Amino acid sequence: MQEYWIVDLTNRIVWVMLLRDGTLVEQGIYGQGDTVTSTTLEGFSVSLDEVFGGEWHT
Image (cartoon, rainbow, N blue to C red):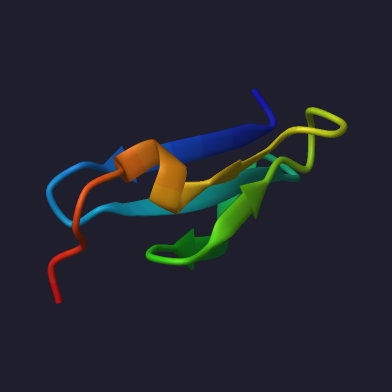
């Protein structure tokens, strides 16, 4: 697996980790208003506002 998405439902954030030379490195942390794009699945992206829906807690 070259790419991992860790979804925190409580805080409504997604960590994206990439496997580089056998080590997981953080590619980014995403939240409200962000769209996450996969580096391994060509053409795949997702709006976190659509995924989590509802009102965001601040």
